[in-house]
Figure 1: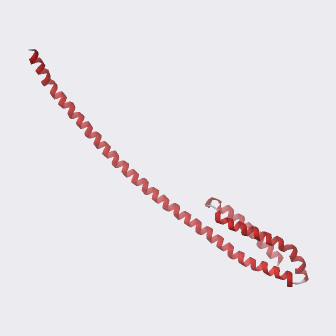
Figure 2: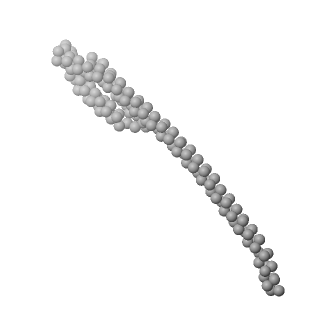
Figure 3: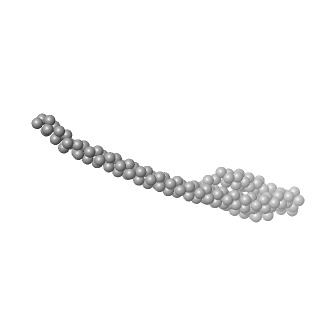
Length: 158
């Protein structure tokens, strides 16, 4: 009887053990599928992030190129104007030597200040090469004012 009871119990438990194995295998299968889905979604998110970063890098590079062109154009324009002004200053220097008596007396007092203003402007113009996009506007405003003052001083001396 004990044997019959033990055998009955073993046969009664076998389906439960097999059922536990099946639910464990199904759970593992579901977990694997969920992990694969998560991996696919992570891969897609990484691809989107990489694409967004590439687009941002391109926009930054374009903005930097635009800034460099703007800065170089401004510097070039001021250099052209400075070359013209240098000719006017050279004419004033020549008038001191060959000009009228009034030019010989008035200009020597004005020319040192004009030359000093010019030198300061040239120094600031060269420092524009180191200006960043965030400091460029302030630097050009300062240079424009210096230029205006210098041009005015030369015009008054003429």
